[in-house]
Image (cartoon, rainbow, N blue to C red; front, side, top):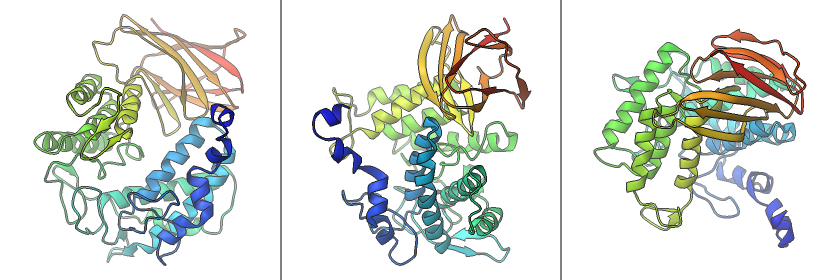
Length: 386
């Protein structure tokens, strides 16, 4: 509304992914490989022909996907689906089957680690896994019966495993993580894709080992703002609130400016401060894999906390308080008919769930999460066992 009042409404509508996709710029960036991609940076018109970082477009599409998942507006899904299809086409052109019949990614870059081209980078593999997995989920959810679904399923079933070693996730099949690296391009399956889950014991062990190795080695060289914020979110995903806060606190000593912008090697930027906001949120509430985690990683020193209308996947608005370290006053407003899956403070039991008319709502427990059906525009209050 403020943009429209200033005469900028039409300009605003032309911004972003829809404009760039429709313009054909992303297709031209593919340089004959088919589909769409984008370089590390691009012009306002979307042109960035550098296609050797295969995870750039999936990460961008993941942001679009999150907007859809959090808003619950399926019109965004209909716009996203063809973009994902086109990116899958580009990624498929960058795959080769090995002798075991597994798809590996051809030489590409892992952002900021090295300028060398590396075989089968985790940056590319993790991004491809998320793209194909999401396409199949959307195809089933909306009964699209897309003719490419069989190929997507075959690729996903035979995608090579993420390269690992004794230190956890590697940069690529031919490059371990051996030097400080502010970026977490080899850890996207931990965050933000969340295709590795701390709920699975083997995956949790890999996540912890990988994140700890990245942070410990990077402390010696290369630590900077984006390391602190990403590290905080990953540690919070693992439920390590104290370590998450200690990592985020290091941001105070970095290159924050008085206007809360961040400066490193060039002009002021906003991405690191915005990432810090999500890091704080991640200690209070998380939403991934269509599940809600309330107070999943609150540091011990945060005894009294309150948040209101924090949005999550599934189009839910959550209110919750922490008083003397104990969760209370938890309510969830549903903006569409849906199924809610929620966990409170790493395992606190829910005694009852009531709607805003006082009616008791049936719920079940599945793998540590409480599950109940919701109705659009109805708020649900969660009472915990003392």
